[in-house]
Image (tube, rainbow, N blue to C red; front, side, top):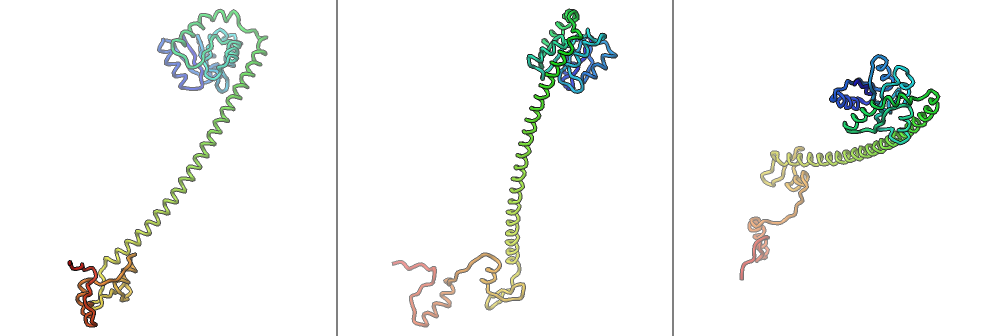
Length: 276
């Protein structure tokens, strides 16, 4: 058979094309009802498998146009939809003259069986073809179905927009949080860098050649100022000093001075007491 596939989604058309051609059928494709009528004006088709929800001209209107065209009204048409799925939608499909109605997705077996049944019952449909007087009633039902579907799509769109707004707000909050954390971390790194630079400068100062007085041991700084070792180190580091006397200095200087003044028996700091 020569079959026209009508669907605005290319992936759906391709799936049907591969399925039907694997069974030996010849296929043509259209993206909506308007394009389908253009193809039918120049190509003789045995059957049409059409989606319903499509731009420009949907599947209901396409079927209605076929059944009121003397050259096309005998072509078998199957509605194959995933959006118009209510009982009233199925009734409307039948009212506008569709031979069969399928809800996506179906197996290849069901699709082929339905196509065969539609072709077999084509004569019955021709015998009970719609009268022109039925047009007003049918179009009223079609308008109701179309408005209902548009309302459903509008509701879905509003929900999608609400989801997008929530997602956008979450993204803004996440971005603000990230910016704040980056600023805080940058400030921490800058502080750490300053501290490190200061520490390195201190190490550099202490690692340089220090001019030292050979007598009093004072250190000359880079401004040619002489100061004690303690003052120099305290200035360039965080070190603190306490004062005492080492054992060698105690024996050499302090002890003789004490004995000179009659003080005896004083041990040097840090020395251990003699045993019993």
